[in-house]
Image 1 (cartoon, chains in turn cyan, orange):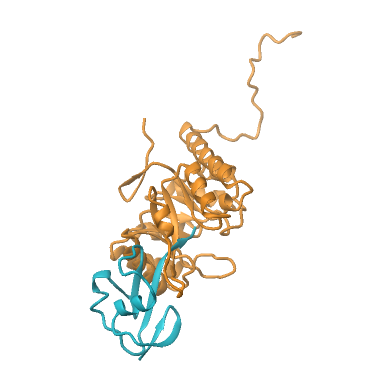
Image 2: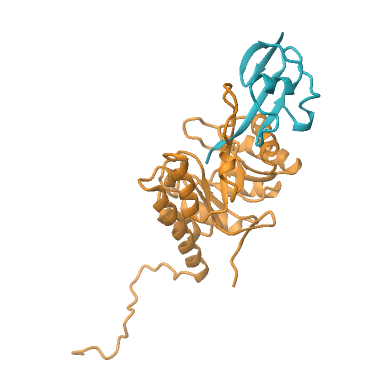
Amino acid sequence: MTRLKVNGVEEEIAVATVADLLAERGIDPKARFLAVALNGAVVRRAEWPATALAAGDTIEIVRPLQGG
Amino acid sequence: MTDQLSIAGTPLKSRLFVGTARYPNQQVMLDALEASGCELVTVSIRRISLEGYSGSLVDLLGGYRLLPNTAGCVTARDAILTAELAREALETNWVKLELIGDRELLYPDVEQLVHAADELVRKGFVVLPYCNEDPVACQKLADIGCAAVMPLGSLIGSGRGIANPAAIELICSRSPVPVVLDAGIGTASDAAQAMELGCDAVLVDTAIAKSHDPVRMAAAMRAGVEAGRLARLAGRIPKQHFAEPSSPQLGLVGS
C-alpha cells in the first residue's frame, strides 16, 4: 500500500504506476480528453504504464468541464 | 472585402467567443452556441470526480475550436500546470490564462499573470490572458508574446457592461495584438459597444447562459457583435456639443 494524494485527497492505495491508479479508479486507459500530473509535472499518456508511484506522491487527474 | 479575425495566425470565422458554463442544461448550451455562430468556445480544466470518469463535454463540442482556461487559479504555478494539463487533455496549445488576485472580485493578479504568461509563451503556448483594463498591463502582456489581450469590461458575471470605455478604447488604439473584451458583458448593446470601441472580438458566457432565453440572447450577441464591427469599420460621426440641422436650411415654408 502506498500513501498518495490523488486530486487533493490523501489515501493509501495498492498501486505501482500511474496506469494502475487510473485502472483502480475505473478510468478507461483509452478514454480521451484526460490528463495526469505527478508532483506538478504532466505525465503523458504513453508514459502512464511506465511511471512508478512512490509514497508521498501527489497526482492530479483532470478533464475539461464547462467554463467561461 | 474580407474582415476576418486572426489570432496567432489562425483565422477565426466569428468575433464572438462563447463560454460553456452556467446554462440550464447541455442542450440549451449547444443550441445557444449554434445560434451564436461562434467558432471559439471556452472550457475549464477540473479534477475528475473520484467515482470514475464518464461522459465528455468535449465530445459534444466537436465542431468548435476549444480554448481551455485556467479559471480559478491564484498562483502562477497552478495556472501553468493547468495550462499544461489542458494542452495534454485537449491537444491544443491555446490557453485562456486567468490568474485571480481576489476571490470575491475575480480581478486579475497582474503581477502573477505577467509572470505566468511569460513562462507559458516560452513553453510554446498561444496565450490569451484575461487581464484588467489597464493599457500598461496590456502592453506588457503583448510585449512578452501573448497572442491577444483580454481586458475585462466589468466583473465576471456581473452583467454591468463596459465600466471604463475610455480605457478599453485606449487599449484598442495601442494594442499590437487583437483585443478581446472578456467579462462583464450583460446584453447585446454591450457587445456592440465593445466592437465600436475597437475591440477585435468579445467573449461572453453569463450574459447568454443566464439570460431568460439563452438561444435568443446568443443570436442577439451575434447580431450585436456584427453591428458593432460594421459600425466601427464604417467610421462613426464625431460627437458634437452643438446641433447641426440635417434638413436643408433654404426653401422653408413660410420663410
